[in-house]
Length: 300
Image 1 (cartoon, rainbow, N blue to C red):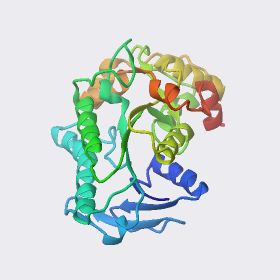
Image 2 (spheres, rainbow, N blue to C red):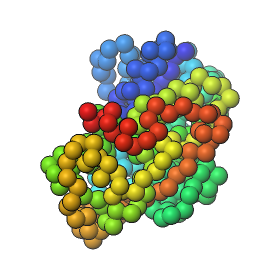
Image 3 (tube, one colour):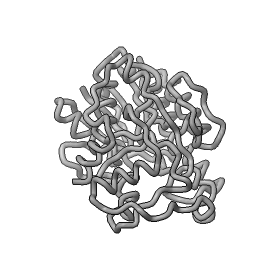
Image 4 (cartoon, rainbow, N blue to C red):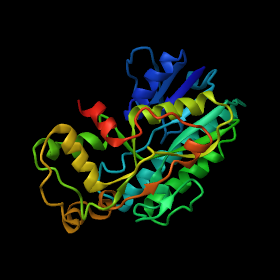
């Protein structure tokens, strides 16, 4: 099949591209600039100008939408919040418009979302795909994101991948979290009791692959490993794998709030997310169901 990926040069996009190509699928990207990427044709788009290079959508079977401004890249001003929302929603609107104008249909539209749809901090609640959306900024962003995905009428089916904390050696949260651990001053955030619902990069990419290849898959999926872990236990496990001490005091919550403002909720909040649909409907076979095994693979 021919699969178009937005945000293909990001963490998930790069790994997913390799898995798709290994299965014999053709992958093309939409990007803000032309790039030379081995075995991938990169087409240009300009979302603010409402432009997509005409050849980009020819003979496409699936679209995987991964594009979006980084949640933790900048302090959350009101302007930045709108940018985070627009960077996820506007690409969907533009793709839908182009396909409708050409009267084209595709087999499926698979979009990223986030477990923050339930709220940035949901305490001890156990949440699955049937739980209600939260009422903070990130939950609102995900709600709009998933509504646009469901309403992507040029696709015969749609799915939303509610992404947990993706663990990868190539980027994302893990390398940043591991720096103090490697220096021997590993520490949790706040009281360290907040839940982390995580997933290995290979497992989330296998989920995307399964969503593409199985024509019966629709709707939202919580993309998390079976065993959430508290923040302090996560750092302690990483210290064990790296054979480093874990003794430093936690970073106080007020310090993070002073440094990061509202965005500190991403580090201080937590979610215990259950992968109910992956387990019950897909019988998903995790390569890395346990954190220690995942970290041993990624930190070796």
